[in-house]
Length: 153
Length: 153
DNA sequence: AGGAAATCCTAGTGAAATACTAGGAATACA
DNA sequence: TGTATTCCTAGTATTTCACTAGGATTTCCT
Image (cartoon, rainbow over all chains, first blue to last red):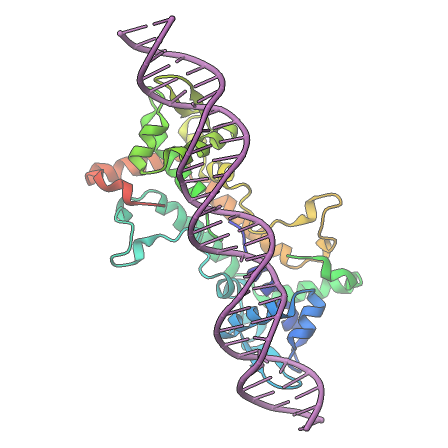
């Protein structure tokens, strides 16, 4: 039940992007420098976020990324699902027509997985990027945010 | 964000155990036969559940396992945490004294991981084994539960 | 006593996923 | 034309997962 680095790094990157891309696009180089992430790896994450319609890209010199939607319309859930795939804790095969779990109707644990799934999604869908950006600004205002790169989550 | 087979199989096994161990201990052989699980693997899961104090074992012929607590005092959360370890989506190193995340105080994403963690734990802690046993009995009453083994979740 | 049925314990292992790295093509600004 | 960027595909070392294997120990039954 762990999130992979995709989700963890990607959320940090998007918060960073939301903070710095108000006027001009933000390059992968600058995000990865601030957040202490591998450029090449972050590149792949941004590509996924783009496919999911959360960011837009500007190619060429002076280019980079910007949010494709206002920060108060992008939820943590949108970000995590884009990067991690479905957040449900178990892939119940009950969906496929001929796929798998013939016991779907009599499967007791399925109820449990559904409940977990709902609670996770509800939680992540109600936290908006804009809110995290606010928090971040508050905290960086208080302390000099010099050592931000230490946080790997 | 997927549960491993440990949590999935283990929960099924414990539901099975709760149903069949009212009078006598239930052997791994019989659980794995009913649930269509590898005996050797299930053995390891039962060992973990024992360490966690959820089941007791009776050695020797005629032995097996019984619940160490009544089924209405064992939650799904107890089972999953015993088998999967902590359910928190990110191992924030903020706990260790000299361990890791120096940015803990200024870490924005930490808030997100905490919220997810809380919602997962709350959900799984309020579903009791006894309830799942009830559900299982209802469903097996309706249909002839012959094909139970097909469900791999 | 002796065998059968069970738990207990440690280690090994093939396959898959993870977390990157690498190389280069395409695009746009200056 | 050159430099800064995104874009795309493929390779790879490490780790984790999901078992399998071998045997020791305990207890019941005859």
